[in-house]
Length: 306
Image (cartoon, rainbow, N blue to C red; front, side, top):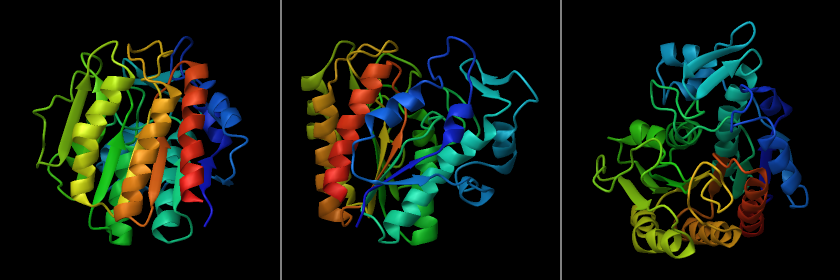
């Protein structure tokens, strides 16, 4: 089976206001870093409403995907939709749906969605933190509802807590959500006591934490939680803003750490899920750190999922 990378030029048509950290330049930086990785490259399809409705109500989907004629519509102080954003938003979700179809259908063991905008801050009815649709959550629910997966795990190592993913699965024990993130930091959620139906596992890392703290919370708490869930599929919210170079946070995670956590998640996928992994790009706002972090992550995925 072949490892697959989903991308699409429409991701560069989602234009944010000048000076915005979630900018068009992120996409070329990632794609260039992945050029030498052996994979099938597939253009991401547009998601229709069917998979989106599993995570969001119809009126919210309309709001989150309706673009202005020109300029920007601001859905929150950080989240802006431009005239050409709608295809990017729908393709970011569509890549995740297609990746689940591919992996759950046995046509590949793993896939990476090299897409923007990100998704893990999008709550059921709220766009925030640069995110419109809950891409990883949509993928997990598609695996359950369309492919019969009994249990799914979402592993999130973005530096910011995935409050949107937590919101979608707060009372849904079919999905374990395991997140490491800096605290205090935006969005101010993700404390240890936030446990949902016993399926939410949050591990905070203090500012200036790095390799030791990152690996410790995954080894001691988050990886065991995923292991105990015995998922049929592992989805990764792969943010690279915990990188030591990133300007929006204060952690000192390295490329080697991103490779390490990817290996550990692939070990659990091999143990429980026939190796099935779908990873989707979240944050990362220093272009160099984003590029090298994503390459470290995807190189491991490509090797383990080939």
